[in-house]
Image (cartoon, rainbow, N blue to C red):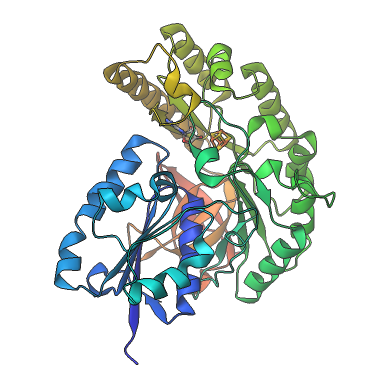
Length: 441
Ligand code: 5AD
Ligand code: SF4
């Protein structure tokens, strides 16, 4: 039988990256081999994002290019999944004529069935219903040969309804997998050589709230830490309001829990935080940051900030700048507010002009670059432990690894070190990476 090839283009967050891995695993069972060459694909999947307008535009323009492919090869199957697909549903077929199927965030498990129907040319397919079952998040994706890190989805959905955010509408309500399921998956991954797991969910630290088994997120971490073979545990993303004392203490007590937390603050103004429906004040956020740094002095703290939220005054913006000065994040993802259909903020008055949003964003990013470089420079001369991930992207002869604090370090070393923990001395700091020299043990 002729080989069939699958090409997947992934947009958006780590959750989507992992969903794509699950799609590839499911379709491997139907005989599809992954290719990174779109031209040789028999099946093309776009796993889409719609968190901001820009992400959605990118999807449309890339999808538009595929009509040529379909003209040249009428047997080519094209499907779109992910958040934008969930949002548009059948409208996606109207917008992009050459799609065979559209599937939402709760329907990944139905992919083989959709592909089979498309092969039989049974007309346009749309599956965007929400399900109460965990079918679409517990799919096992065997790691690619040689990889040492893997994502593990522990929950999906969000109940927070931040005023700007489409996620609760597109991923549905919070649903957690059972600890037994998660642990079984991690043990399987360990048997395939995985040493580091990143626990994924829209709001990981509210894990377990809606399952009746007495395990919360801190409890889950403690159980995962007992699995031999796992050397590092990471998680993303957590909500500051749900960051419990017990979870903070895990950073001191659990050796395997990496010294990094991504803790999106979104704004430094209490007025804006309230408008955003975030459920905490800047002061409460700072108390948690202080606590984290007290129990784990080396911890790196990264965050997300939105500028130009409706009604954000120059004074509110200045409060964000002041907060950044006081907290000094290790790095920051910052965004201009992007209006999303169906969200509460869409109806707010006091929208900020694009050019003003851009001005605020640029100024904030310049400031953060300064802090990031300062943080990285402070590591020069120190000794750090790395998990070696592979060859460096910039220079083939270099290896690259990550510190527990999530910083990238490039260094010279033998290929056999890939997958190992090594110690390096940091020789030079840059904005986006560090340079290290290996220390012989
Ligand atoms: N506009 C701009 N940024 C957004 N984010 C989420 N929704 C929006 C929006 N409508 C940002 C938040 C979130 C990150 C993943 O994306 O900062 O933490
Ligand atoms: Fe969106 Fe807020 Fe939920 Fe994060 S916590 S996914 S920002 S609604």
